[in-house]
Amino acid sequence: MSISKQCLMSIIVAFVFVGASFSEENKDLYKQYDKVFYFNQLFTTAFDFNLFSPERFLEFLKKDAYGAVVVNSVVPHYQITDPPPDDWIKPEHIPGLINLINSQEPCRPVTTIQSSTIPTKLSTIGDEAMFLIEGFREKRYPPWPNSQTYSSKERKAMLQWWNEFSKKNDFKK
Image (cartoon, rainbow, N blue to C red; front, side):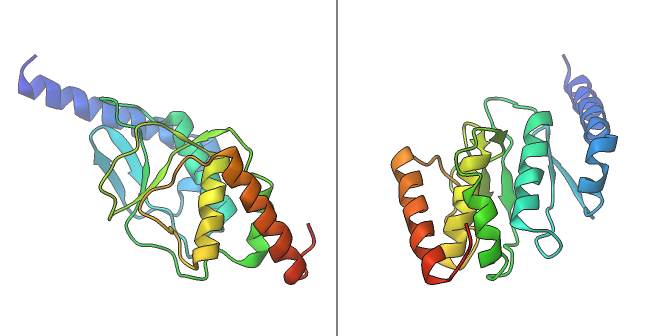
């Protein structure tokens, strides 16, 4: 295949994928975007942290995971270029996030622009909820350059932290 045919095929794939991504069920999710980036045949959009909650961010990661295309063993990840405000994750978000930490539902992993690695596998809603809670605890999101896979021991420790935090701050579970 000549280079011009490869280029044409890439453009056609891009238009098909972009068209599929704007289905009726995703329409409200994509209203917020000003820019659409197309890199290495992966469709990436910007999430507006000023408009939406951490729970909505998890929905965003989940929706993109189901329609994502894996090309050349590269997992479609969400790269944060402009982090949200330090107080984006509020104490009232934590109970809902705690309820999700055992979810195995697939979603895109999160990276920052400072990350030196690219994820090789999809994440889960549970792991990304844990990453958001870590962001709350560190008082910045994302707390590290990449989200990660958490062990059952780390999940237990997070639940223990939540029990202590919620008692000290008079939160209802």
